[in-house]
Image (tube, rainbow, N blue to C red; front, side):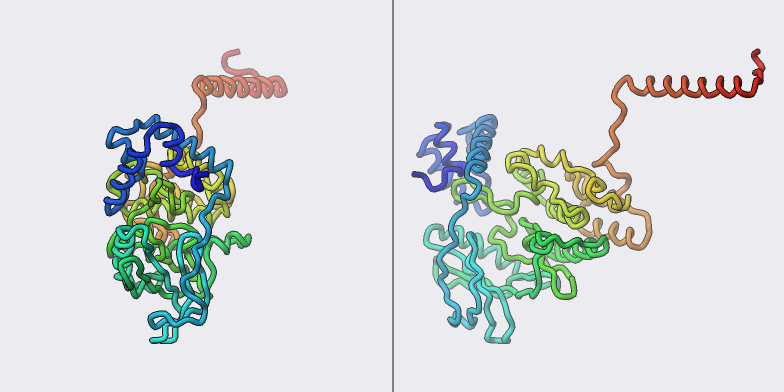
Length: 398
């Protein structure tokens, strides 16, 4: 029995849209790319599938996921043990999940706590080199509001590790999951902190790629820190060997997978979704299926924030609107522009965002305007005649 029946490549095989040889070729091609493309995109590009067939595969893939929502890979067996000394780090706690081997450690060089992540495995040494490339890029970013790798070390051809600063606090995901209500000022402070970290990141080497509520940690002073621990840092949304999406689907920008050149505006869209969630307690894409999000339909259906937060001020609505425009050309060009408007709101100054375009009030249906005008005229006429009758007066035309 296939242990991963929901993956893109397996679904395509089951539907007899490709054969084993084509899948093997496509996977080899995908692995050869330094920043992998989606499997479906490769197969369409090379004429092996057409877009209708890809949509058919995605629909079948989504149906299988709904039938088996708990299909998750088991957590990997821990390679390190509590109390062990590993290359100058004392293992304090095993933090491993289904995707990463992570450990809370004490750096013996300074006695400070840190997070050590193991990378690699014998299955795909090329993937290890890609991960190391992005970890070393992230190593250049040492910002007070970022938990970025400060050490990246390859142990052998198949194994490496990175170490980042440990933030004592709670993730935004857990905070909101516990039912915590954030004030407007707290919400603004969180996105300002993350905006500052993103600005430094964009100036340094590129994009975050996996911005979500899970990699934002709030310290004891309620300052937000951006955690750079994702193995797909810099390549935006990654795919595993069979085409399964990894990363936080509920926070990805609509252009991902549709354009070749991505920029800071994709991170700004993700930050806009987080800002929306902080202000309204609702994650706007969470109720949609993966297929609806990836196809772009879900991005057309984000409700106005006042549906969940009636007191949301108009300027914040304007800022959110510009961050969440489906057309990236209508978003803020840079984090600087976004932060400038957020500061202007706090100072009571005019915004650059202009009027909200995302949540325009619906126009009257065709044919209703004359009816409204005519009905209003009849009402005014009725009231005028009633007053004449009560006063017994006459008009100039009588």
